[in-house]
Structure formats: C-alpha cells, structure tokens
Length: 255
Ligand SMILES: NC(=O)c1ccc[n+]([C@@H]2O[C@H](COP(=O)([O-])OP(=O)(O)OC[C@H]3O[C@@H](n4cnc5c(N)ncnc54)[C@H](O)[C@@H]3O)[C@@H](O)[C@H]2O)c1
Image 1: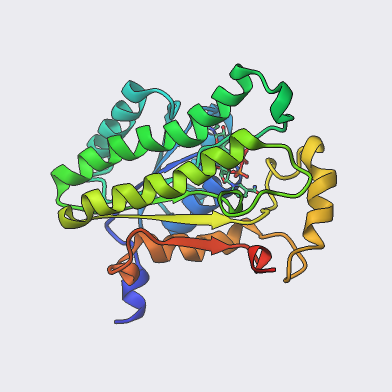
Image 2: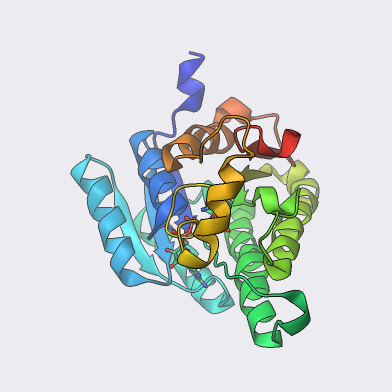
C-alpha cells in the first residue's frame, strides 16, 4: 500500500526538455513508474531517442516538438498530449539553457534568451498545463530550478541564469498557493551540478571541476538521482506537499 503511492500507473505526464540530460532521464523514470509521457523539446533529434528508450522498456510515449517560449505551441502540446494519451495530471518543466557572461558586458539579447527560456518558459508551460489540470480536477507540477536560485556559483558569471532560477522558485510558490484549493500542487526540484551536456560544456567545465571539491559528498549528481525526487513530488506519495523546493545537491549549499 505504502509503495503503491509512488506509482504513476494510468497517469499522463508532460516533460519539457525531454530530449537531453535531466529531462530525458526523468521522462524515462516516470515511464518506468507507469505514466504515459509526452516528451516535449525544441530539438527533435534527442526526443526521438527518449521516446525510443521508453518504448523499448515497454512504456508509452509521444514526441512533441515545441518551444517553451511559445504560448500557442505549448497550448497545442498539451492539447495533443490529451488527445493522444489522455487527461494530463502530471508535468515536469525542465527545458533550459545556460551560458556565461560578465554582467557589465552582457548584451540584452544574451540576458533575454536565458530569462525567456528558463523563467518565462516555465510560466508559459505551467499556464498551459495548469489550464488543463484545472479542467481535469487537479494535478501535480514540478519545475526544475537550481542551486543557483539559492547561492551564486563561485567563479561562474551567470547573473541572468541565477536571476531566472530564483524567479522559478518564487513563481512556483506563487502558483502553489493560487492553485492549492483547486487540486494542483506545484513544487520545485533544485539540482546541484549534474552530469549532463549543460554542466560539461567547455566554458563551465573547468570551473565546475573546482566546484565539485566544495560538494560535501565529493561528486556531481547523476541524472538517475533526480528520478526518485521527481516520482515522489509527482505521485500521491507527496499529496500534502506544495510550494516545496527540494534541493538535491549532495549538501553543496549547506557549507
Ligand atoms: N546540469 C546541471 O548541472 C543543472 C543543475 C541545476 C539545474 N539544471 C537545470 O536542469 C534543466 C535541464 O538541464 P540539463 O543539464 O539536462 O541540460 P541539457 O542541455 O542536457 O537539456 C536541456 C534541454 O532543454 C531543451 N530546450 C532548451 N531550450 C528549449 C526551449 N526553448 N523549448 C523547449 N526545449 C528547450 C534542450 O533542447 C535540451 O534538450 C535546466 O533547466 C537546467 O537549468 C541543470
């Protein structure tokens, strides 16, 4: 009985950023827990790989190409998800971008790309998902934030990224309270440095290698270690949790 609370059988989940890294790993994990998955990403190639991995493991998934910055595209993604898989009751918003740039010389375009994707894109996704869940009688949404919402990463000039992630944390709390009485829970997972293409880009990798020395557990997070927290927050196992920011960082922000 207790373990059954963690199952997602019969649920329909939408995962943005499902074509790579954390989103791809969590999409596969949610499918293993029984959910049918709408895998959403702006990049088509990675999506096909995620869908194929889910199907090979016996799960159900569809690939939906959409840009999280585009309201009409996200509305259409939710509409197609419900038409092909059933009523949406879970969503995990993971699509994101990252780059470095000194604040004093950062162009408006560089600022805007990161804020538009990592903050506005999360709002646009929540709005489309939330509208469907309000009609469906409830659901659970998890937004992927970052430890960068809690600390400023030593040696990484990324004022746009840090500000956007801090925005995701408070956006999620605000939505959690707005929708609490309508059956929609909204929570955050804030990962620490995770072994994905984003954290291994040459412009950040040298610094991330140093930052790993500051992690109490002495290593990066593996994508698979974010799957359990996601299942917990999307399933009935967390039915009384809303507005939570679950930091998964090997203790990094506790020094
Ligand atoms: N890797 C880390 O160390 C780390 C740590 C904390 C938080 N995060 C966050 O986790 C999330 C996933 O990061 P990752 O490391 O897996 O990166 P990744 O680059 O491997 O994956 C990001 C995915 O998002 C997609 N994407 C980007 N812009 C999009 C858009 N406009 N519309 C739809 N999809 C879009 C990309 O195509 C890609 O498939 C991001 O929000 C990131 O900020 C990552």
